[in-house]
Image 1 (cartoon, rainbow, N blue to C red):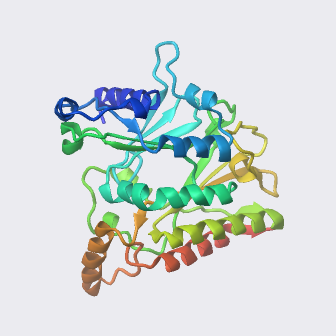
Image 2: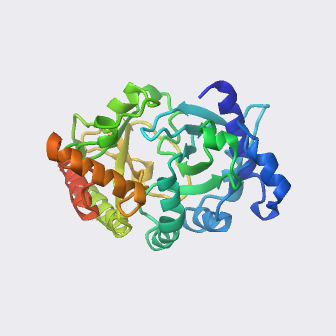
Length: 340
């Protein structure tokens, strides 16, 4: 994405977060004018009250603290690009204070599943499980009108805002030693990587589709039990929503670092120390937007199953069941651990 498109998109996102969605009126003239927008498109918040409840009541993120992360200071916009890091073609931005990440959802089956099927259950689950390790999704902004930029793919129209696992890194003198891992069960065949590679996605991104931790997570028995108990509950919830292909995002940084956190106290979001005194670990569950019952997933399942009759590529995330994916995911996490 070039600098002009990035600048206009960040302006669109920022404006949406400071615009009252109740004041937005859908008119015929508005639809016509919006259609011819290519780079700057008007975005508004989706279910603003629900997300405010999540932030304020469940995660203890105050309105002023939240707004400050998106406010322009010294004529500098508060969002900076992180590059097209996602295999789905998603675009990522970070707030300059590193507290929040903005991710576009360009694929219709992903954002429609989140809005229609997952959002309300996610809200209810978080109310009962405030210490869940599912990534905190703090806002959702979208374009209420069809635009040329949206149709041409130049400007994504759906974006989620998430609490960042990297909060505090930029202020850490040891920030160069921070490491991140996007972990999935590695014995799956990924058809969108191996069968239908996207020409818009860089080869470097394809290589990082599923990281591998060449080490062990050395933690105490008590921390291990706590982690697995939370992940078992979280993945049971995702399984009930028929979700697959989610990942464990793990950040590790030097044990002597004391990075700040955002919102509710949680040791796995702040950093759990390793028993050998070398690292601290942060953990979140990401990318739970692929649902087995969505039309795209069903179509891809059929295509890949036919290909697999000849190709014999083995099990795949989109042809597995939600129950099987959950089992392999938990097995992967368990195998990473070295308990003391």
